[in-house]
Length: 173
Image (cartoon, rainbow, N blue to C red; front, side):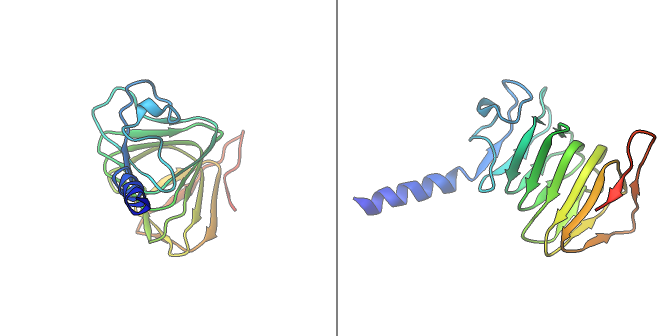
């Protein structure tokens, strides 16, 4: 009896290792009904498809996702008090990234960011915390801080611009 219970729980977790953004209720990342199999976690992959009316916006708080895929035409927005940690892979193709908060690349293999065909509208704070490193494969600007906590940053024939203005100064931390 215990063996079958354990097997059921194991299969249940394996089947629900992926959740897809539907955006049927709102743009709020924390609304369960916006996801096909629950809000993403460090154990649950997330896919943001294209062709939707609502795309996810992360409110204030700390969020972690295992692997995330942003499909062509999709977008993701981090509010100024949002922190999103990607602990696995970051797949994107033609997606829009709007980061007014903090994005942490903390994968367990080399990550590439942001993607040759992706668009970055805003990049406030970006942290690399990946011992195997991150490859930046498209030029973009950082208006807050670019922080290397662990690993290396490889610039793949691109530029990272630290954009400062009269209100704030971009930094490398």
